[in-house]
Image (cartoon, rainbow, N blue to C red; front, side, top):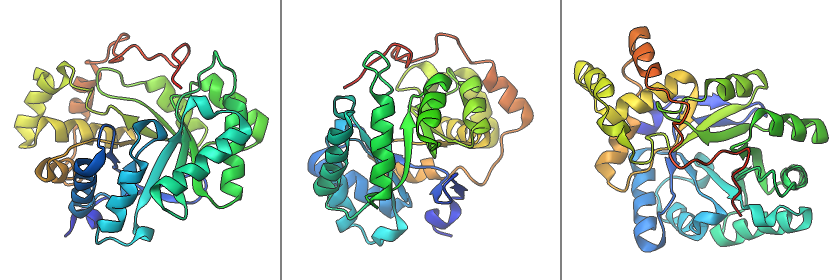
Length: 282
């Protein structure tokens, strides 16, 4: 069985489906980035996540053209930067994402941060609603939106995001945000699913679970995301690691495993103190 047929899919609230694991492309740029993305597609990834601020939409488009997988079998996501949240500018930015990637449409387009101090995320969300109506994107969502941000855009537009991509890993499991997303019918994606090279990858509790199951520590973490109902977006340049990261659907973490991992949570578990209530990124 090939990796892509082994990966289950998740239905979003707009009726579209996404694979239960995706490939993160942050810092994958230029020819080396293209090669890593082609390898990821060949390894079995069908969901690839990029952003305007990653400056790699062109590289991703090139990887799609070089890969043996038809475009319609892939799910490609990008994100609107905070500096483009004015309505007209946001629409132009979505168009530019299509031009840079040389794609006819994007499967998923997200607001990258709420940037509440700027106060433009409702306007930007209206632009994504319009972009979807124009057929430029199939699904629309957000990143790093707290419950109050979600409530505000839903009330203003009548449109619920299909997805909320948030920082999520065992040191920062975000149970309240997960519950909020679920209650609203919003899927959760995990950025920094492995904790961005903090001590998570050396944690003895995770090492013990991995040893018992005969899996890698990374596979245990990614399986934890899946059992929480979140879609992790791991990044790896090595084809071997890429394949390993996909291989998480043939085992189960026990209830005790999940409890042991839950004990790793910390109120200060964010890796870079990027609290969406105050953090801004443009």
